[in-house]
Length: 174
Image (cartoon, rainbow, N blue to C red):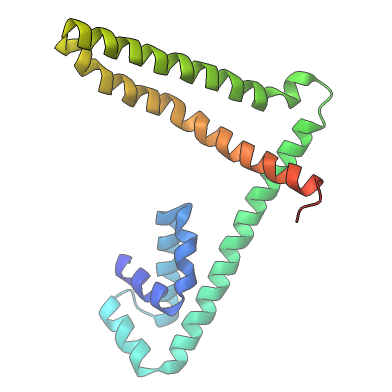
């Protein structure tokens, strides 16, 4: 069904922005919408049907608009769930329930700083002693640290962005 995605994007270019989250899943659903409206999963036959009947093109656009609305509603539900959770955390009576994100951020920053200093020390010693094994170890360490800090970094980034947005709204910004 992958070739049908091109037809979907030609019919409704605004779908491109929807492929940022779950690209594969959204693309498959969009392709199935195209196939159901056009009555075929064959891209050559689908294009022929579109060119032969302009009314089908309008039906396809309408179906894709409805699909886009459905995806946006699902995203909104997920965001509402995240916001509800974050609001519940800030209202918690125990400090560890409301402060875990800032604490995690501070601990991650300190740990990241120590890791970078450690890599710099290894690099200095490796260059000073001309140790090829130590030099070869540096990219592996960096890769492992990237994996280690990538997920928490993404979580902290999203949490910080939403927290900043909340603060701006509280300050009167819309």
